Length: 98
Image 1 (cartoon, rainbow, N blue to C red):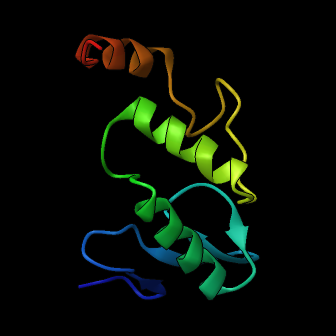
Image 2: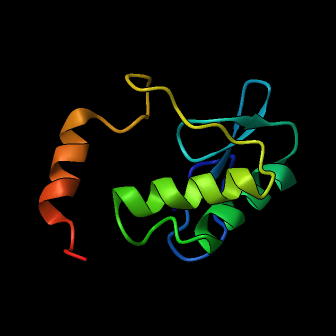
């Protein structure tokens, strides 16, 4: 059963939830004025391959969305939700050789 105030986009997509000041996709990040804007962002993130590929794929996908005009920003190192040094070390261990 889904908590009140949350909707799912499809399958296992992260929920859009009502927060102070509007709606938010996921648990951290930007707060949108309307639920439709938050759902649109969630669809765009999943369409760009958010759930696949790992840390570097997610970073490249986000940079691509920013270049295409989304109003997202890259998180500053050390900020809440930003990849940690440990995450980068783990990604380097599991990276495929080119």
